[in-house]
Amino acid sequence: MKLITVGDNVVDCYLEEKQYYPGGNAVNVAVNAKRSGTEQVSYIGIFGNDNKAHHIKNCLQQEKIDFSRSRNVYAPSAQPSVTLDKDGDRMFIPGPKNSSQHLFKLKLTTEDLEFISGFDVCHTSCYSSLEDELSKIAENCQISFDFSENTNINYIKKIAPYINYAFFSGSHLLDKEIKSLQTICHDCGTEIVGITLGSRGATFSRNHQHYRQTIKKVNVIDTMGAGDSFIAGFLTSYTKKKDIQQALDFAAERAAVTCTQRGAFGYPHPVEEELLSIR
Image (cartoon, rainbow, N blue to C red; front, side, top):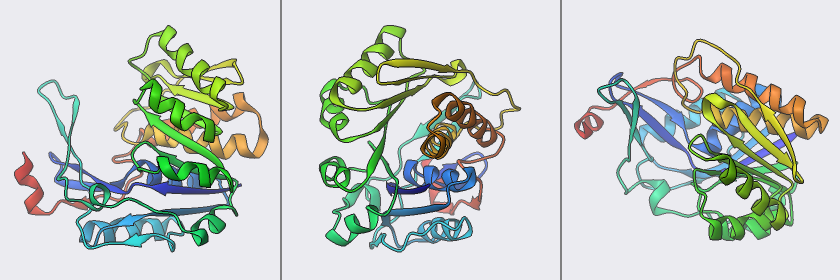
């Protein structure tokens, strides 16, 4: 199985710990797919020119993720922050808007598309501003798309005709809302629709046939990136074996492993002092 991810890279800044970790949906799925057993994984994104971008690249190199077709720009890396509220729950604080992720948008070249055509699946998400590129990617490769919590019907209908796998984060959704999302995607042509439900596990459908998956119980340290690990595990297993229930069980195992470590996939780095002023 060969997977390419295209889109965002960020550092998640844990303010209480004064540490940041590499992240971003596309980067997280790439690393976790490699760890899940995908033979070849590549990443295309836009890197800033700061120490954070260097750290992300270094981590990708250590994980044997090729990012040679990525762009480099003169801008800081995106750096959302994570802190705790008075009850100990995580709160996300948006980072500065002058980052490489906010200022620049990927435009795929003919050479990029030829490169993508050598992979089984291309994964991207609503965070990567690739909506206008999906029709071209779909001519060269199957597409996996993470909508996260975006359930805007018009947006879904714009994306779904081009993708093979749709993923949503839906712990807040009612059962009727879940079924509606799955039906809309299938009617637009998407084969598989997966909705992760937090502690309730996940519900998937393949061409209107439904499946459920419970969570794997572990000592949870941090849930950052668990959903991305689930996606990576599912794509790795399903693309190889075409057994959706086996793929769901494997995906749940991979998500559970992620919950036992800090950050989306580890690699802590001390936060630079200027970030601490965000508090």
